[in-house]
Length: 162
Image 1 (cartoon, rainbow, N blue to C red):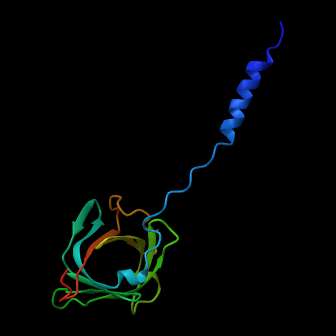
Image 2: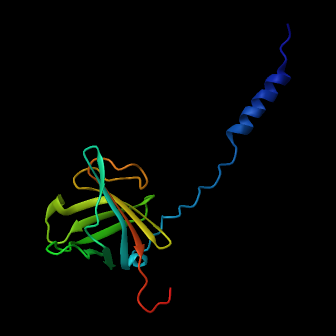
Image 3: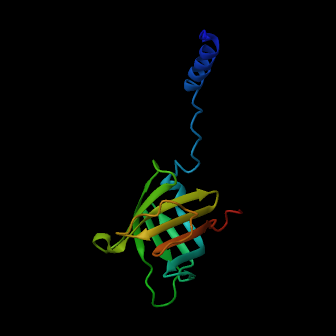
């Protein structure tokens, strides 16, 4: 029986053509370049939720968050409850962007929060865990034990007409 090189050659050529197919360009990341200055202003708390044990909970302890530079201040709390402030850093090289917060006046990891954030128009979503637990890496996943989620909406300055 004689070998038939043509079918083998066609199969080899098809295999080689597939091995060098062009790679599609990466999809642009919408949240990759959150400018910290874009976060500055007063934000209304739409929701604040957290998970304890097997239960998701929410609270209205704070009505606003003020962001100035790299400071996050929770305001509008009930009487007798202090308005905590945090210093934060944003890492936009990750997707979604990462946030690392440290409560002002608290040393070490005791006052720290680590998570992710997304800015869409006038809505800011921040999901985090308390340090030293591993950081939250996904915004929309169901909250796990010790995870917290803020949903904030930008408040327009008075007289802005918006």
